[in-house]
Length: 140
Image (cartoon, rainbow, N blue to C red; front, side, top):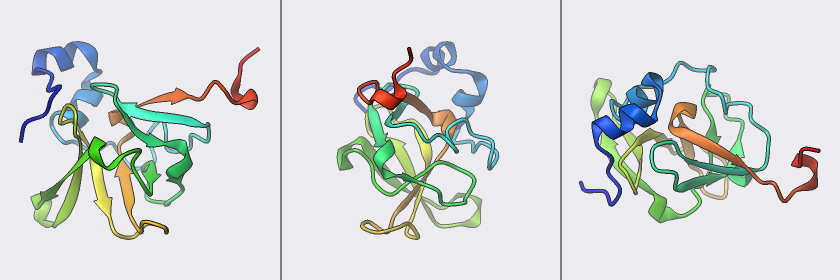
């Protein structure tokens, strides 16, 4: 699979923390209930930590009680590539950034309507950009 903005290992190591690198390049999973964005309630956009493209809006984030940030829809179907993942003796669907190939997490069919999907995403794979147009989030 080829990605338009595939960053080299050296570029990613310079840009990311070792923990972020392990998630996005080595397909690691951060420990449950440890992620920076698990309880984030601010309005804004979640972007790929590696390349910066928008992936999820806070409008589709919900509490799944799974231990990772969960979303019922991506910003656009073209921003995330779904890949079969049969590792660890399980059949799952891996979610990767369509722009750079970064591992984000997995998608499950137990989410809320209207999609029924749960994008279970590692906080370490995301950057959050707060929506500064909302008065409640503007800092004095």
